[in-house]
Length: 292
Image (cartoon, rainbow, N blue to C red):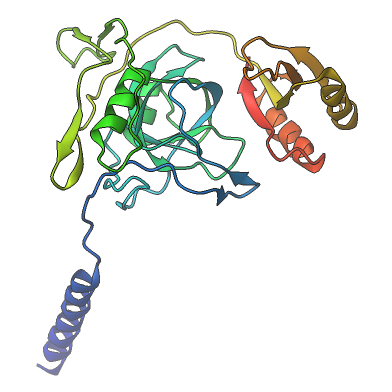
């Protein structure tokens, strides 16, 4: 009888602790809102958020490992099964297309969080997005990220706390989305201008983007380190000589900064990570990995 009483006392104690933990757990309340935010420090440098509706980047995508529900930077409740991701500097929320260059798979996601913390990684995605893109392990994947300008502008306009934009944008053409596993039903047309958000008396209202992936063509992949873009060749050459890189030109650099300092091609992610660390050691805090 004494042993039974001790077991009963132990069970009651465990239940008491469990109940107390349940009561003390904070309640997550979603309050989506538009945010740019201040500069923040990552593990190897600072990031400075800025509004951009025409951004196009290449880099490495990683699978988010912390699957604990939490409030994202724009006030949403993080969900491992949602079509969302994290970016270091773009305004939040923003809609982007993300293409895995190594296998051609493309998804459309909403950025709602800050990250990744490493400058060597471009974007972090939920396990669901990673699965659709074919990122089945913790190894990063080469991706291309393109901001969906009409959709992202529409969200900014719908948010009562965002700066109002006067520039009108024509909707892009429709694309056809189809499930790769054959379980998604018939293909359907998806216009990038479809509304998945709105405004209420409480602020910005966001709907989940559809869980869809588009098939495409795989491309050969190599990497490079982009040290930065410069207005003059002399400044670019000085950095290149100091850091063991090369100078090239690009009409896409913009704002007159057409002289680029790069190092590559590099065959593997490990080589790119090593070269990025060398760039940081050379004093170029803004260097990043790009996909060629």
